[in-house]
Length: 121
Image 1: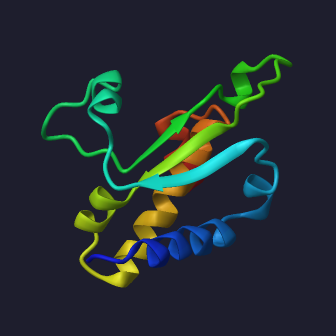
Image 2 (image 1 turned 60 degrees about the horizontal axis):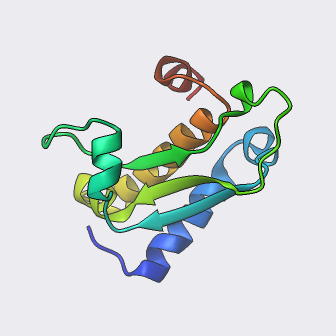
């Protein structure tokens, strides 16, 4: 399944709007962006093998680790269009994958680990 850039951006907005308000309404200083593919540097930083796929990435200091510290640059959540599209054979699957990936990365913003994110989902 492949969408043009505007369609993909619209689906990210739709996914964001469908998430529980208490979690998305308290996001502060977080840029939600997308790019076609993870960079080689991102893959190296995360120690990903060639057979591993990266759908999204949270970059920043999780709320649980800030201890009152403020930042000037926004944290960043990136969704990777290519990997998400390749994993999604239908529009319904694509919408769900975008929503799931966005929720997962928002969970990291709050300092949650993978097990806790899955549990809350």
